[in-house]
Image 1 (tube, helix red, strand yellow):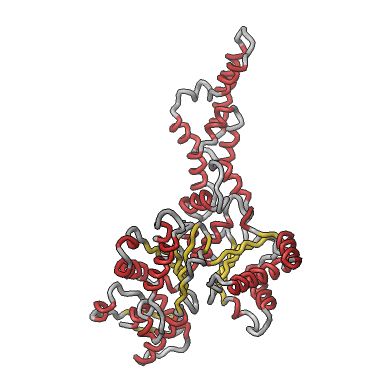
Image 2 (cartoon, rainbow, N blue to C red; image 1 turned 90 degrees about the vertical axis):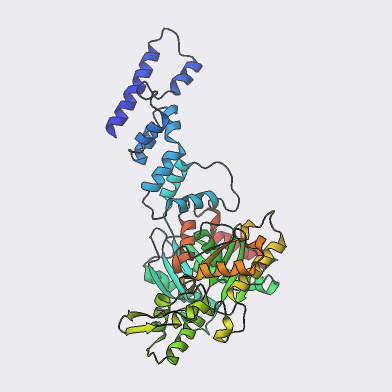
Length: 469
C-alpha cells in the first residue's frame, strides 16, 4: 500500500511540476484539466484494471487516495469498488445480496430518494453500533445482538414469563428484564428492535385499539427501563424482509394458530383480510403425541414429541401415494433413547391440508392462502397481480420438509390459471429464526435508527397529544 501511495504521489507531483514550469500563468481551464488527471503513470491504465488494483488496498487507504486529487476521488468513489469492500472487508455476517436488498429497499423505507453511494453506505454501516433484537414469537422468543450471526438465546415468550393474571405492564417488564439479564446488557446502552406477534387481525376499530394498546404497553415498559430507542415491527413483515421482499403473502405457522398475511410495500393489508386457521405448532405436536400413544410408543414429555416432530416429520407431496410406502425412520433423543416412527412422520403435517383428520373444523392451508389471493386480486391495489404471488413461510413448523412444495402444488390445483401463473412459495429463509433475521436487516442499515425507531421524547409527546384529544 505504501508503494502505491508513493507512486500516486510521485505521479501527481510530476504532473504539478510540469505545469509549474509553464511560462504562462495557470488558467482555470488548465487547472481543471490537470485536476482531472490521475498522473502520467496511471492515465493510460484502463479503468477496470485500476479498480482491480484498488481492491488490493484496504478501505481506509482507498479513502486516502481519494484525497490526492479530484480524479482519484472520482475513481475511489466508484460504487463497484465499495460493493467489493462491503462484501469482503466490513466483517458482517450478512450475505451481500441481503445487504444490497436492505440498503436499496429499507434504508429510507417506504420512500426512496436519491442515488445510492456505496462509499457513504460503507462508512455509515461501520458506525452503526448495533442493537438488541428480540423476536417475541407466540410460543418461543429468540434474542441476541444484531452483530451476531444468529440469535444467542431462546426462551418461552410473553405469557410464560410471570403470572398470567398479573397486569400487562408487570408481565412485559418481567419478560424484557429477564432477557436483558440473560444477555448481560444494560437496557440504556443500545436501541432495541422488537418483533410483535401477529394478533388482533381484523381492521375493526376494536382490533385497532387492541393493537395500539399492546404497542403502547411495550413502548411504555421499554422507555421506563431507559431503552434509548424502540423499533417494533410485526413478525410477518420481518419474515418478508428476511426473504428479501417488501410485498407478498406471509404464511406464519405460530404456536397456536396459522395466519395468512397479505403485505404490500411493507404494510399489512388488513382491509384485504388476514386469514386465520385454528391450527398451529401445538396442535401438530399434540396430534403426533396421539399417534405415538395409539402405537404404544412410550415417551416421558412433550419435549420428546416436539423433538421427533422437528427431526423426523415431513409433508408428503401426495398423501395417498405416501400411505403405501415404507416410511420408517429412527432417531435418538438425548437422555430419552431411540424412537422409530412410520406413517406418523407425514400424517402429522397432513392436518395442515386436511384439518378434519385431526378433528379440527377449519380450512386447509392451501384453501386459506387461495382465499387470501382471491381477495388481493379483487382489491385491485396495484396495476398488476405480481405483488401477492410470492408466498413466504415462517415459523418453526413451516420448516417441515416438503411443505413449500406441497403448498405450491395444491395452490396450482386450486387457483385459476391466471392467478396461479408466476406463483412461488418460499420456505422459511432462515428457518425458525426468519423474523429475527428480518429485524437484523433493519438493525444493520446504514441509516439505523433513523425513521425506524421511536425515541422516549417522541413517545411521551405523542402520548400527551392523545390524552389532550
